[in-house]
Length: 257
Ligand code: SAM
Image (cartoon, helix red, strand yellow):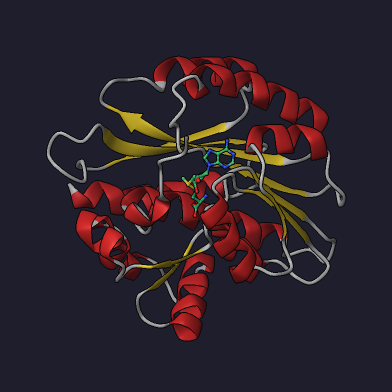
């Protein structure tokens, strides 16, 4: 039973962290003419209305992108996606990761996305009619299609961590993905939790992929007592320059405290 809906959290500080670095990596990959593949295991609906009741109720976007949008120059890849989204869909529109990918990729590139929730999947297909969308478990979908054609590219794994086993099973999935797609950039988003539930997962990932980039930012919980106090991105085969771009982003998060 799926209960997580990203509309409650769209545009929060974790999205800013993940989407800024995703847009940067996709812009890096598309600097060369060679086509790329974008694979995403947990897509969400791609286009969010931050004036929707759910988003207003949590106030997470007000604490997130509303404060962060001035951090980025007009030519930053994330700013370009934000601007394109509001120009096309109105001032309250916010791009999820599949839309960020669609806005950055070219006609020669390919996009394959899994989304298990039927309503989210329908919205995703409406927002991105040319993407290959699978209404399937994202982890299984990735095992079935890797390595993709073309071979250059990136996979984002952005689970809702509703299934507590995810923390145990993710390192095993990623070990196989990295072997099957031995040139792909593989990025996992994870929450930083007061319970430290993410700790053992990270220990396994770091042991398996010692050259990966582990980048984390911290922030105040969205509500007093909320367990998420930061956002992490673990990137296998990080593109050249990503660590520096992430370090600049972190200086902005550090100033929020
Ligand atoms: N990546 C999106 C973004 O940044 O815009 C947000 C994705 S949200 C964190 C996680 C999504 O995964 C939800 O839309 C949820 O319905 C979906 N989901 C949950 N379990 C799934 C599974 N096993 N396979 C694929 N999608 C799943």
